Image (tube, rainbow, N blue to C red; front, side, top):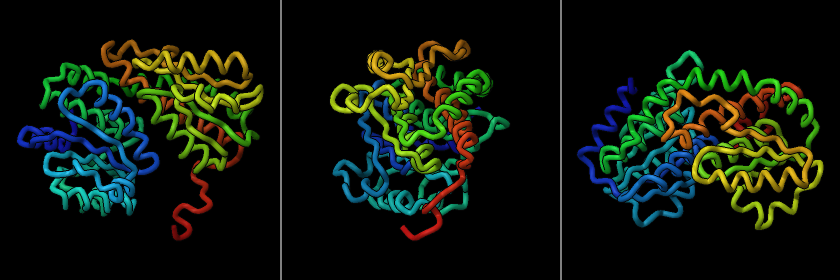
Amino acid sequence: MLNEMVDRVLEEYKGREIEKVFLVGCGGSSALMYASKYALDHEAKTIDSDLYSSNEFIHRHPAKLGEKSLVILCSHYGKTPETVNAARFAREKGAMTVSLTYDPDSPLAEASEFVIVYEEGKEQPFLNDAHAIMYELVFGLLYIKEGNPKYEAIIQSLAGLRPVIEKAREQALPAAQTFGRTCQDAKIIYTMGSGANYGIAYWFAICILMEMQWIHSHAIHAGEYFHGPFEILDKGVPIIQLVGLDETRPLEERSLGFSRQYGDNIITLDAKDFDLSEVDEQVKGYIAPLVLHRVLRVYAEELANARNHPLSTRRYMWKVAY
């Protein structure tokens, strides 16, 4: 059963003319939107979309932002100043603003026309997870405005996803523990993916490795690998390669093949290795990143344990002015 706040937004879609969707956030809140951007690119026939970092959204001042725009924003605590200001900016332009946050009383909630409070943790229905809500909003829009037939398959797959994720996490634990031990002294770790997976590669690089572990990193797009980045590959450099189930899988398979040929420290997370039999076949490409994201979290936890560097450790964030 959908969150009643999501239902309210879907009902509002029916009375709004929407030609453009802007996905706006920072850091991990931005990264969770990449898969939805991929879905809009692949599925939408009449609706354009863009993804922006919150502050650039304001300063770039998109000319198409206006009354026929839908702006979806996210901030976990709802206090990210750039995202709060982006919501205000969008409303000033007449756009419909829908914000995801964990805190219903946050500044972002106050600044937005519609607010959806998400929940996290395995005791919560996955339909209320932020990643799931993004798909509910996007595929709901595509269904209402264009009759997209995949909406029901997405909702049903999301509703049954929690046990799929927990099984994948358990399966991944031994490999994640090995990763933690072998990479605990690594000075740099790269992540790579494409399509619907790229957002979680980006999240792991900037939020986990750089922010939470102080390890140099960069998210490499698999399609760009052979246009510069592959020159950094040697026998020792660790690369986490994501392989998904969407239409860009051939890009990831190509980069993985090369990395395995010339590198010795390639950590592969392939969605085909996990049991997604409970996921509707026609939407597996969209669901796979949500499963791989939770698997990568296990890798993050095991790396933090091996390095004795908790994921909550910060040098600057929330401690100094910036």
